[in-house]
Length: 462
Image 1 (tube, one colour):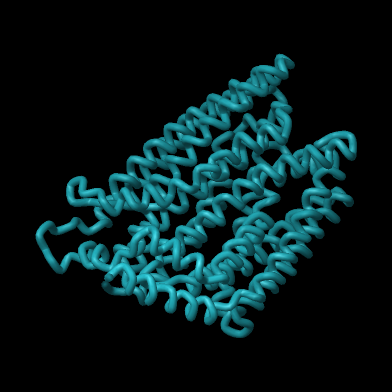
Image 2 (cartoon, rainbow, N blue to C red):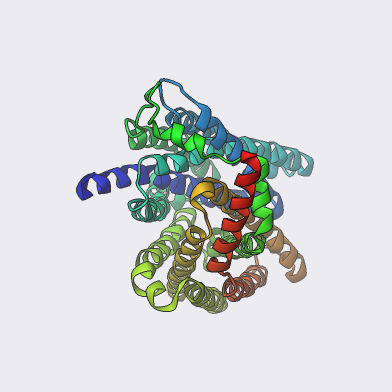
């Protein structure tokens, strides 16, 4: 495949990730801000509802295995990607209606209705999480199917960057689509804007997903003994054997824990960033939504440049520490900006925090690629994916919960002190994760895994 053709393919596939990035702005950005600030739903309940989508991340392994077995029209991955996308786009509309339904209960002052409607919203996001897993896991497998070993790192880099592009573009386009509803204090106009948004956005996103993967997956050729999938099947290791390999490498458990801490720290601000902009800096809904663009551009810059400038000089471990230290410092700068009520300093700190987060993310991805084995690449990436998914879900829930806790201490969850408490916790967690990543040893990992694989394969052949 020529370089120009490969780049076009990578950009097409990256469009799928860009759609997921835009969806995250809608669900964890706009919905979150509406519920906490405009509709005055408790932050802990909001975080529980929106974060529940990550509780079903364990299903990713099952969906991946099912896509391996799928032979619909000689395609394995595409049916799951398209079907999952249809499901999560439909559930986005349902979730939007539930948000407005929950807002009605909050406005009437019925606490019981708020709680049980919030739990229903959480259930909707559980199914939303299943739909995301059903689509995104086979999509990751498709990246392996359509690329060679040499092409894969470049493909992953482009697709990951497109995720951040989706967050930036989504923040700008979705807030622009709300239009004049952001410029008025009239709740009815705001609700009308949200209704238009949840109707149009899922349709556009589903169309883009179909365009991104249509015709990309090569069809299977039945009866061909040289078929790539058949060769892969001959090299499969049983689930019991895979579990044995995982247990025999102490670096697996260590990196799982550190990666979880890093992901938790990185996304702890996700549930409180936009409400912070509204409560402390008096930003309207559209302006606070665009904060995702500021953070996303910084992260994109950090991810795109680190692999060429920093990691070759410092190594992945020390690069991760550098990113952790910088991220922690700039999170504290965001707190300082709030104490001064300086919007310009806050935007600057948020952008720099994004750069630091991008540096850490790039280093963590480099370590993830090093902590795999060709025979069990899917298994290891699935394990790391589980760590990230559950940690991010816990971060979303914990961000709102911590805001409520610090709100009780300071007297209100919408005060500067409550938000400052969350950001200080985040800064310490980022610093701790950076220090712990220094102890990740890829050479020790490879040595242990190779010995365990040799032993397991020998026993299974017997």
